[in-house]
Length: 284
Image (tube, rainbow, N blue to C red; front, side):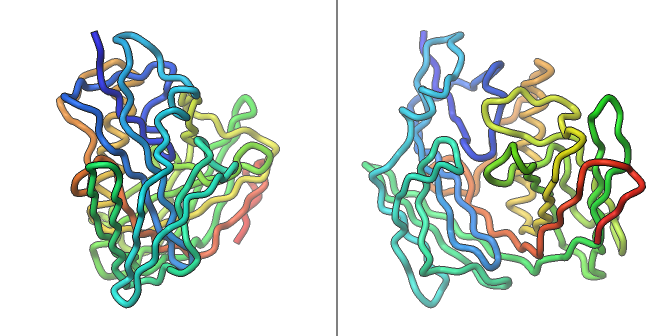
């Protein structure tokens, strides 16, 4: 008996040691793409995996499902650029499509088109205005594990959505999503704090917490549109349902037409670094 497994490489949709998959009728194209303010588009492509029932997903499975020969185009409303696929050891699997001909700017809308085999996948996203981080500090340390806080000031206008990404020096080569560290501003006004307990890394089982004392810890606060926030909320529901073995009756959301996955524009101000030590220390 076989099943189709959709793997989101960058987001690490599920800890692979306990991956469960919802059966699908056929393999699908999976798109993971994002563009940050001040940055260039990044797109990772794969095909959902066909595995024997009960088989665990391995790193070799992920590498074999990489899509390298696709035409990926991004338009900002004024110009279009075809992205180039390159090996990038900072990511796993180490292959991304990008270009320096398109740069993310707040307020602009970016359209994505992926052409591969019989697939034609399209999506669009808008980069919101970034919100700066006011402070990052260690709230507490227990058994060499840290609870870290990201403080920022939510603007008065409603309709803002936030997600925190983190990177530990000496451990990470790029930013990873911080578990549960996202919110909308429906109940916010002014100074707000988001707690960071764990970093979600591909191929690692998600422990709560897993942020270790003694390292340098970089924090990036991202603003996004409502569709992107809905994706991350749905992602968290499925992640923890998988960990605790519960059924949700939901499937992974996507803002891609003609494929699975996501295409997200992030508003990003300057990341902030904190040394993971005494809770009394705060850095602006």
